[in-house]
Image 1 (tube, one colour):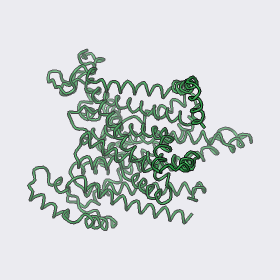
Image 2 (image 1 turned 60 degrees about the vertical axis):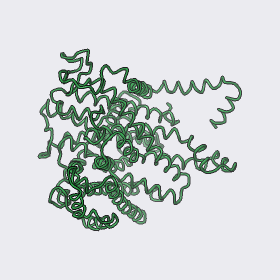
Image 3 (image 1 turned 45 degrees about the vertical axis):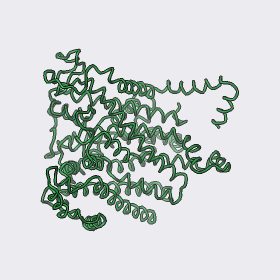
Image 4 (image 1 turned 30 degrees about the horizontal axis):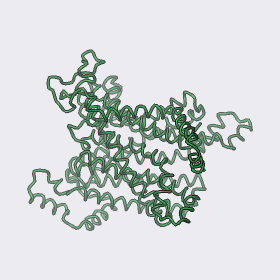
Length: 305
Length: 302
């Protein structure tokens, strides 16, 4: 087990390093950063001045190492736009995005697992079809449009919840529903197929033939095994949601990490963009690492590879 | 096995070929989701292809005196503009029809580009294994760790949004699932007898990969293709909605939602129409994908 964890940890670390290189290069080769920062009206001299000021005239490898050495110490430099350090901007916004992601994930799990279990028990009935349709619609709905629809219905027409901002817990309800519905279908389908598989297995037949009542069989014996892959998927989904929250945050004017990234992209504030991309990638890598370890703990067969 | 029976059948007469075709057709007709999905998708594709003939108006012509006319089911709707007009007086139905072209073009092109990249990587990793597999698996893991939406946003804003930019960006970003599926299906077939016999016959590796292996993993890849088409269409809409995807005056559905945003409280149909169009298209593609997967998987043929 220790060997397994160490090996996975090393892979995770090197993936994080590679992601930092790739995101750095992507931004630097997509266009001339100095020209973008200076704006369309700048003269050639102003562009040169900015290039020197931000160290963009240095060789790219040198720029990268300089950035990496500071990034490891959690120093992402200064924002071009605000006169703040990037780290202080991020630490201000990160809790909001994490709250949103956590709420959305919790909501998705609370809906997905019961729905998946019921759909599996009632396979091929109208309940199963309804549950599947609910999932299919969730996968097809553009999240920005769903968000706007929620605002029209629940904020403007019914006045139940606020339309945007982040000053109270009510402000998180609609965004969490919006983001959670996006993550729910995959988990529901996985719970359903997992349950179907488990319910047809030998040990469930044994449990039933022992005369255990059906709810004990389903909840204690079957669900416990069917839910393992769902937990792993939930960790990965949380990673995706942190990256995808940019759209939901911009629809609901939630001042989280995604909105910071989006504003910084429009302001050509690249140190911030780079830092946010790296931080979200590291979160994703960490979450998949924990999912792998958790899976291996619960299922010893996985440790071999 | 199935290859053998097929060649044996076709060499006798053309008669036995009919039941085989019928069997597939019956299975197709018997799968409700696949049927519904294909019909909707076919209608949208036809609407996109024949948009110039179907559209009642020019989608780009503005008419200030005809602004924000509601659709026909409202009291003030007119038959001249069945789905109403937008804030510049452009006919909404015509824009919707032309918008289908944008969504489909981006969905198909991005899925083809990412399919080429992902399949190449996945097949190489699965077939050669060992160090090649280790390197390619590492590339896949790295790609998965990159937040797609953020990277696409940042790059689109640097390169400048346009139809071509969006296609290339999404094509370069969405290949991961192709690679994962191509890799695992290739691994399953690597040691199959027909591959071994092709090797014995002295076939070159590219020949084996392209002519022997690829046709056998194609059905799995087509399912991924539908998923990634849907994914690309939704991402394009999101990019255009945020203003750095397809640029105005193009009638991209995501852009139509963005343009209608400031009117949505009093005229919700301005965002409802393009939003529902997006949802129906993606739903149809997903239904087709799910249906094809059921048809491929023997256990799903119930």
